[in-house]
Length: 567
Image (tube, rainbow, N blue to C red; front, top):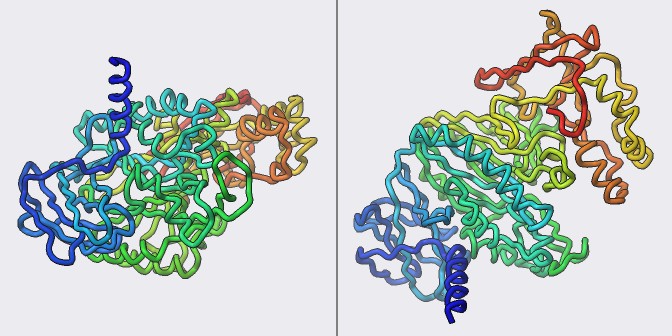
């Protein structure tokens, strides 16, 4: 009997982690008005808060002087949420780090139901945002262990400096926290991810948004697939789009993945379609966003979190901007954002770092205020490289990690934090003489080249060259290389990263005996820089300066060995 009681308690504790968020019951009086289907109160320290915005994802209402809101909702999205005002933050409870800014609707569309919210005061004009993307926990490749034992200790150590100063830290998770192709095979879905956050004691409140792999692949293709496939996500994390104010910044989280799941594709347990999708912001979101932004002063910086990048350069060296959205979709979004002082888009999806300054395209003045930050995956190459015994790196060979945004009032700065390196390291230097020798003599390289002759062959690379991979390069960064005090010519060269080849591509093909024709396609990294030195053993002084004048240096002693774990 005792064992049964314990098991029931465990089950109830686990279930509570994924139940509707707002567990607050207010003593403040509230009564639904005629025609209103959602109502309730918003308070702080037992006192009503006036003018707080509350939304069902379609309409936005304000609390009155008694802290009461009223919404005439059709309850389409199945939840109600508050738009947290400046100077406050949502509550969290125990080990559950998902903020309690939303509640699940439980009554039918015509029945009025009450949901109350409580906020706490927060001195957060100065705060820090940790932007993480593509965690991809699927309960295989020791992904949970790697997340717990490598990424989290590095994150905790990095944010401790801010905690000591009393600066609050929040996390924006930018989608693909799971991998839907494995939900039913390895029994780990989006609800399990939320439980994992509690189990590992994730160190900050975490605001989440959806990625393509957070949709339910068991949802049949049909007219309403995109919405139906979010059901498990909404049960665990609430609204798929919402906003909040932290300090003097307005944050908006959007779902820019339109899930299709057409018949066909790779067969997997529980999955009924091809898991395909398109990158788009739905009509419902755009209509709601127009209402949301109408209440935001145009001098307020806007930060948008979403899964897929929205704007990017047409090529690495051009200032010309294109969009992953359709032309019409991108134009409507740009129109909503064009009058704000600054707009930052934070995204993942590509498993690589890329900073796009839309102001560089003089033909697109409507985008001049937008910077799109595409951020490498926490999972790197889906945890493959560490699973193969190598370092955890992304799809272009840069280290996995996250991006840190220290914010002071309306001033927003940022830097990349690699999981396995201190924040003062921002690049990798390759002695190409050593890379050349490795490619000439390594048997696995030779076998790989036999199968994939179009991939990079460094065995004939020019003598005494050095390549430098600057992990989060932006077009306003600077790089300098000196040899014996002499400045060398540095040329940006889009080429493959040799660490990617030896840690991801070779193990994925040779070790697993998988020889897909797709693996014969080049994967060039646009952040590679090339210099030619006067000798094979001279010491180089490499200096990289970021957007804010921070200087990163390395004294490169040559010869420098090349191997899978080189740093």
